[in-house]
Image (cartoon, rainbow over all chains, first blue to last red; front, side, top):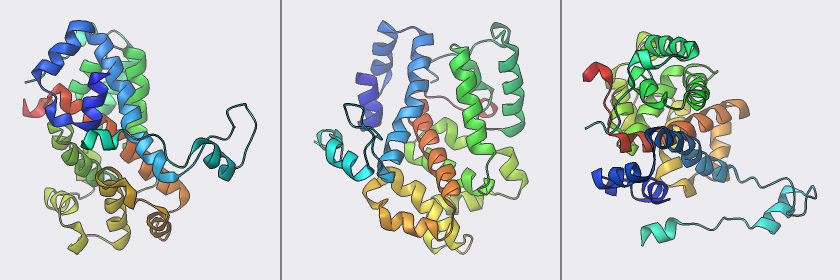
Length: 86
Length: 179
């Protein structure tokens, strides 16, 4: 979780100590698995966010309009960017 | 210094990975180093590599433009590995280092780019520098030059390679050819 947070919010601070931290707990195969998972997740959430679309279904499984979905889920997700800036 | 050593080629026994290695060798992005590091998870790596090749090499948007955008966001991410790689397909089609530098820097005032190319470069730039500027009005501007399919192609391409660059910088890798 620390690796994900650092890459997304403060990549300049990632150093040999951060890498050693990863290696202390994860195998090389697990690190590359995590890396490829992040390939897909770091940029796509930003892209999708710019397109302003929302889940097709309400939390109880009912098909809803995009306007209703936006009302149900909120027009913006809880953002960690403010915390990162601080 | 590279933080994870690549596997020896003899350690990679999956023939599909060797076929993908040959495709990467021909195309240039990524090079074999990337494949040999991530082949530690062969099934995931094969899917990822195919997605990278389809997203970058194929599609209907001008390949040279996508290569400039890729290098632009690699430089934003400060990833030395992907910043240094070059698509052989794009370079063979006439892309030069001068055009790449112009596309990554003061492209708005450059005569080397059409308005459509400038909008695409702006899209890549703003997506990760200030996504709040990628709003309805920005997409309206994109639609003057690109179809929905082309916008999805560009957006997904930028999104994928942004993630790749941000992770790869933590591996502190350099292209094999410069090693």
